[in-house]
Length: 144
Image (tube, rainbow, N blue to C red; front, side, top):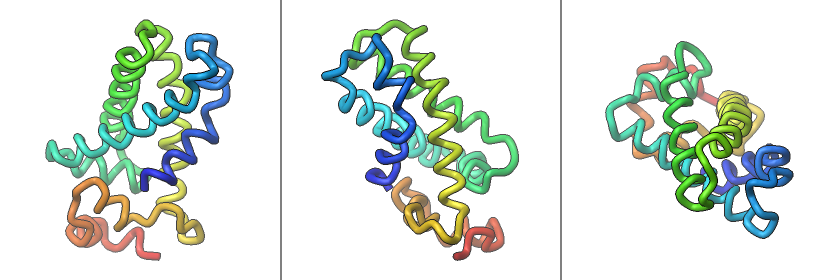
């Protein structure tokens, strides 16, 4: 999951990271890696904190996924500020530009039966969630 998510972040990093003067060019790859790790860590935190319903809504592309997306954005902001010494406004701009695009593509790819880059069972397993329980709960919506 991480490698495919990293590819998504790279695909959408243009103005948010690559062309952003707040991130020095020699730190672009590190910023992309930090953003990817921050997204995965935030999703894992959501899964381990018992917020599996919100995570399921996110992955289904239905319901209110804002709490999960906000958590992901906040984690990206915090880690960019810590790692690169940028201020909150700069980190927030990067996260608000990049995270929604990446999460949207992540959800679309997870739901696309023709796109094998993100298999729901693998994604859930990576997040420490028993995939069979969630799959039963959502009625096999994702079966490919």
